Each structure stands twice: as structure tokens, then as C-alpha cells.
Amino acid sequence: MLPPGAAGRILFSLQEALVPRPTSQLREFARVGAEARLKELEAEIASIRRALPELRAERGGEVPISSGKKVRKRRRRRRRMSAEARAKIAAAQRKRWAAVKAGKKR
Image (cartoon, rainbow, N blue to C red; front, top):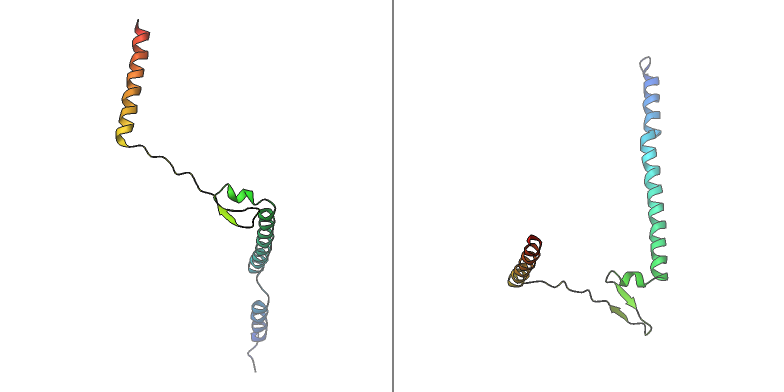
């Protein structure tokens, strides 16, 4: 036999264990909704890529061509200047500015 008042405490703790808390329930609903939206967005992205394959080519992706083969677009390599070349350009620019300043003094 249970002591007086114990039945109420047991029933309350049983209800608390069976009924989800509102915050955990909201969190679960948010997770399910976010997963559904993510699937919708992935499907939309796939349909856009099928409709406009040239968009991927602009970013270096593969582009299907009429023969069915895929050709990878080459990215332009950035040209690098040597220290010597930079020094020559800087000297030439200093010379130009000196000529401009000399012309203003007269």
C-alpha cells in the first residue's frame, strides 16, 4: 500500500514522462519542417541545373555538349609579375609623375 499522497506524485511524474515538453515538441516540429524545406530546395536546385546547364560552366563545372560528352571549361590562370618587372614599372611611373610635377611648377 502507498503512503498518503504518493499516488498523486506517481501519477504526476508518469504524466510528465509521457507528455512531451512544449520546447522539445517545438524543436522536433522545427527539425521536421527544416528537413522538408531542405528537400524542396534540393529538388529545385536540381531542376534549375537541368534546365540551365550553362550556369555550372561559368563556375568551372562540366558542360554537356551536343555529342553527349562533357567538356570541362579551363579556368584562366592568374599571371604573376616578377619583382624585377614590378620594379621597372614603379620606376617608369615615378618618372611620369616627376614629369607631371615639373610641368606644373613652370
